[in-house]
Image 1 (cartoon, rainbow, N blue to C red):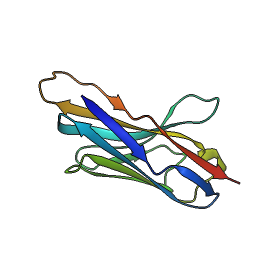
Image 2 (cartoon, rainbow, N blue to C red):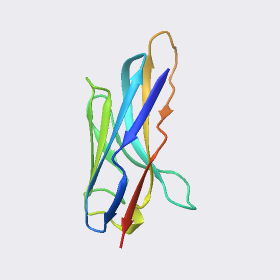
Image 3 (cartoon, one colour):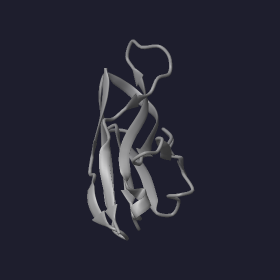
Length: 121
């Protein structure tokens, strides 16, 4: 019913920047919180940043001051601007959203398929 599609991953040198984007599609009435998670090789998935429907943002300490999350509620998109990238930021980045879907009662979340970010030292 709802799909998320990420884009913007790739290879970048340490200190560089990348911008990830995520577009939601389907029978969406609105979207509550949207966010980004990441999973590095051999590690568990971890939360990176979130943004509420009202635009309030929160960040993991590891990315605070370097990453910026934003959204366009009219287009059902969320972006993650990543600056001053470090090799430890290398991971598959996943978009997450809590949509309100026509005809569906209750809270649920959907995930994108992930986009790989590789930061070379």
